[in-house]
Length: 152
Image (cartoon, rainbow, N blue to C red; front, side, top):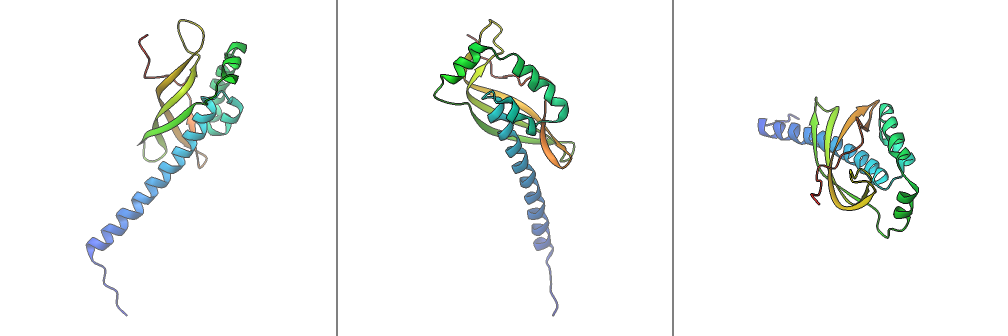
């Protein structure tokens, strides 16, 4: 039995196998980012550790050390936890580095320059995600910065 493959059919097979690989990377990055962000923005820093690179743990420790009793009281009294939306993922350097753009809703912002913490309805953040020993992990080079600052 002789099988004939047409060039368009072969190209379609290659296209779908390549896009399936990209979407698998996107799914893994999204899982990592969602897990990291839901814990981080709800101030569950210990649960965040599996989703960051080893070098990033110092930033989690810094964030945790800045939480005050007042922050804890505010968080405990909230009826709604922070929620996360992954908006976009862009891959750089082949498929080993990605930038994830996320929106965070209803989170406690401790980086208020005027002092004191306050809840923010919505913020935008960019997270660098790297492939580390076969797993995707967030690489922190500082504390996540809200790129959508209110001008109050």
